[in-house]
Image (cartoon, rainbow, N blue to C red; front, side, top):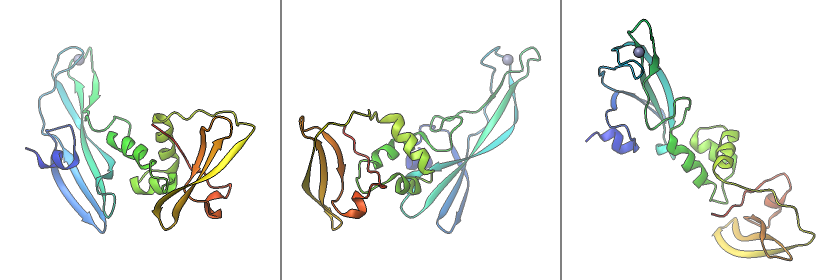
Length: 203
Ligand SMILES: [Zn+2]
């Protein structure tokens, strides 16, 4: 069993840790795969290694106290057939080719939005991404249609007692249908101020 793949819940089992650096609150692990012969997926000729490209990937697993950075040593291959010259780089299941965060991060970001105390800014900080990226991820997975505003709304409070700052949530509903329009975590003015946006969604 490979402990790194278990620890990080990575799907690629042949990954090895080749270096560990710890500086302050950041742990940097260098990951690579052992060299194995590659054959061209296009023509079947043997491929030769064109070297290794280093990619930096953020992993949210140690988000509370440590940030974890994975440096992925990605091998690049080219076909030896002069007629073909097919070019490819090693792929890893746990991260998309063009991305800088692991695939599981998206779902962790969406899940973080369930907490009404979180904002795009606080979530972005936790996952080491920009707040616009956190917001984009939310929009990618959660469909929030813009509905036309009803001609009458009703406002009520619900006792939640989530913490000292969030005892009563403010519920805004369509007066006619009772459908929720928005849910704010508190009735206090620092929350109800119009410049603060609170996202509400149901599954
Ligand atoms: Zn080829």
